[in-house]
Image 1 (cartoon, helix red, strand yellow):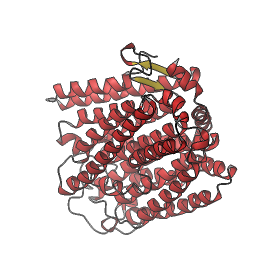
Image 2 (image 1 turned 135 degrees about the vertical axis):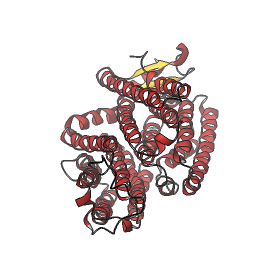
Image 3 (image 1 turned 45 degrees about the vertical axis):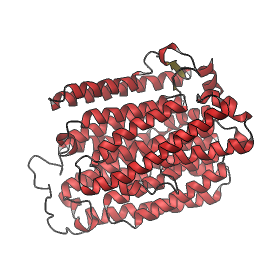
Image 4 (image 1 turned 90 degrees about the vertical axis):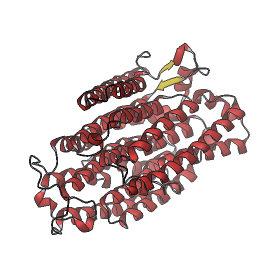
Length: 498
């Protein structure tokens, strides 16, 4: 398995290169991308089975052992995140192939998309901070291109905001690497876990806060979220869906990994994280309520639900971290599915503005179901995955007597229901506003209001959301084991450093 560990990173890079070389044939490009991501999904599942049974798997590039070489590490958390990411990347690619627009009109879509996939895999598997920086830069470079596909003025304007904020975060990340290396003589995370504890309290706290700022920008937590709601809605629907599902979760993963692995339990900023979690939940959901566009509502809700993940981390208990892991998995699936359903609404209705839509429960009832399943999962209704994840968070917060953040999370749940029901009433239940210029409702061969290749992956993610809820027991047990590993990382450190 050690030999196979680099393949989730190397296969997409090789696929991207091959896609560029064979750019004259769109069918061949699609076949390469689909085959590559299917193989990555299979490898990720096999990796998760092995690490859950036998413990962390570690390999070093070029045969160099840690901390000298580039180290790749798979434990329960990183392997689980890799599985979910690979499934989302594959589903969104199928959706993009079926949608008229970005993928069909741009010969470089497949290769850039595979580079994004390689960056996501590297971010989850890396064992040192510098390689994490490289992985995030791979993701960002690909996302700059994907965000502005089509070249419309609104896209370029929003893309510039995204680029500027991302570059600022990258500069801060480079400064963080310099400070960490100057203080400890290493950037290997396993070795840092042994050395950071010896630093003076003030320096250690400064490094912890700087890491929280760097990764908090990526994760879009309060008050560092302002770039997200303006950047995502202008991109093509499949691009927005994969950004919503994965890119912010890489930031969440980095926060969870660094705060649990690198810093002693006595210095972890639990109270600060709970305050940030509550503020992130509130600001995000209030922003969603104020919007009149489907994509902007969904974008603000990304911010809101990041708060739930940070809430679980801020408890710093096995139950809290397990709930955070479970909520992250649920949110990736549900939010990706919700954005894909938003793309279907825009395709069938010709607009994403609430004021220009209506009556789609009669004209496109399948799309109504595909919206309602992930929407109700985000609210937390049983038997969907969101109910189990939120119940686990509430239970963990109550066990720690964190009643303030618990009350905020419950209030935000009700506000989330209100914001999503506003979409439901305006788009599906209200009287039709009349035909919209450019609407695709009358296209032949679209029995469900959209091409079949757009509907099928959306339906698959809706079914997966339901499946995660029905199979919550084994998934929660896996999350508990991953949380226990995070709070007691000795096995991780021993496997990396020998």
